[in-house]
Amino acid sequence: MTIGAERVSYRLTDEERAFFHENGYVGPITIYRPDEIAATWRKIHRQTLDRSHAAYPEVDASIGAPNIFNYDRHLDIDLLAEHVCNSKIVDRVADILGPDLLCWRSEFFPKYPGDEGTDWHQADTFANASGKPQLLWPGESEDDFGAGTITVWTAFTDSTRENGCLQIIPGTHHQMNYDETRHMRYDDRRINQETKNGVRRGFFGYDYRDLQFDPDWKPNEEDAVPLVMEKGQCVIFWSTLMHASLPNVSTGRDYRMGFASRYVPTKVRVYPDTDHIEEYGGAISLERWGAALVRGRDEYGHNRIVTSTLRGTPFRTVRD
Image (cartoon, rainbow, N blue to C red; front, side, top):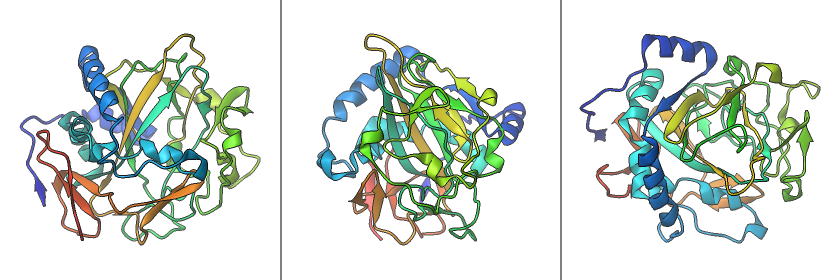
């Protein structure tokens, strides 16, 4: 399978590439004009209400897995399909991961006035909720420290200190501080109820500190960098980089909407040997899921792939 080459190349500069390898992130990078992304987000927002073709069916939040509603809407919303394939994004990611790329997950990250911040965390295999890896690089076992995934977090609205912007700790992608094979217990009563180091933070009903190798360890928040972004900008970072977000302490209706698209090379196995996602206190089928080939070729064939014309046609799942 091949996706046609882009006419214009948007590569990282030598300085950006060196900065990324040292610090684990690069950005903010402007992908859209503010007026352009504002108009696009209004259209997308309306389309998210129709879940008839979504990868995951709507379920009663009381039985678990409500946050998975925010996953993988690029599989059924054309504008999001075009976004995850945007050459201003994938050309830069290819500079890091190589020319053959999959988008294996996308997520909305809303933060409304009064919402807590997200606690400090890292993710390598994404086994943090279920104990089962969602990503395995070639030669990697469940116990290895691998590369994780590249996350491209795009601000669909302005992202400020007041409404809960991202924070990162540069250079922390070289060492994992969390054991993803350990178990975190989901408890929705934790949401919006916890304060850590003087900041209202939680982790979607989990306590990420349960995974720490050293229970007494604390991240050095003095080194934290707030990623203030104008709508239409993005930041590219390793999922193994220590990252968090501030609470939304704004007044009125100043909500923050981020959209994360996650990329790996085609050689990485996604959801290996599993047919469901187990997170947020529930499980949901992967029957309608597929990884999107967004650049280059897939010569491995060990992932379920979706295809798209990239011209307004939704991705179409190609069954094994």
